[in-house]
Image (tube, rainbow, N blue to C red; front, side, top):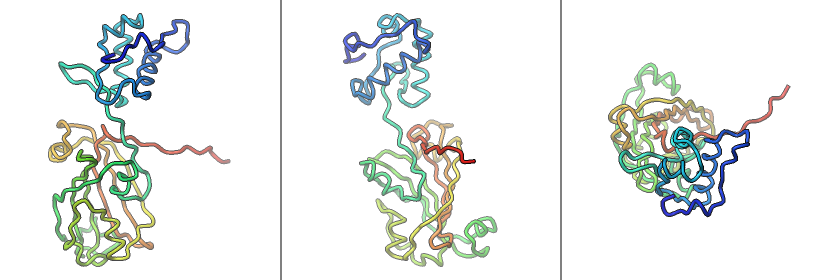
Length: 253
C-alpha cells in the first residue's frame, strides 16, 4: 500500500470464514487507516495489487473498496487512484453553536457574511416564530468554515424585538449564540431539529465547493429562550463531511 508494506502487516483473508471476503478486506483496510498506517491523503494499492496480495478476484476487491468509498472512508480521484479520506465530523444533535462545536473538536471555526438585512415576516415565518405577520425579523446568512474548509451555509431568522440592534454587530468568526446571550440575555435552552437529505442548489454547491448536484444535509432548527422562539434556522451541511450518531435506548414496556 503506497508507502506501506502490507505483506508485513500479517493481515490475511480466511477462506473458511462465514464473513464474506470483501468484508474481510474492508476490515483490513480500515485497520490500517485507524492505526494510521494509511494516513489521511495516502493512496491505497491498486486493485491489481490488492488482488495479488490477498488472493482475491478483482470483483471482490472492487466491492470492498466501493463500500469504503460509500462510507466516506476513501475517495476516488479520476486518473490518479483511491485515497484515504478525512474522517467525517459527527453532527452534534444538541443545542450548541457551530463555533463551540468546532472548537471542542480542535478545529478553528470561521464565518463569512453572505447577507444581513431586516425583513418583514411572512405569514408562514410569523407562525414559525410565534410573532405577527409583518413584524420585523433579522435575516442572517453566513458561510461557516472549520480550519478554512467550507462546511455549511447557515440562514437564521431572529425577531427584531428580541435583538433590536443586532445588525450593528460584526459576526465574522463569532458565535451568534454567544452574542445573543451576552448582549441580549437570550440563553437558548431548548429547541427542535429536523434533518433531511437533499441536493445542493447551484449557489450553495459553489459556496461549499461541492460538485453540482452534490449531497447535503438540510437542518431546520427552531430555538427557544425561556419558552420564547428566538431563532428559526435553516442550515445546509456538506453530507460528505458529516455523519449522524445517536444513542439507542432499549424499549420500555
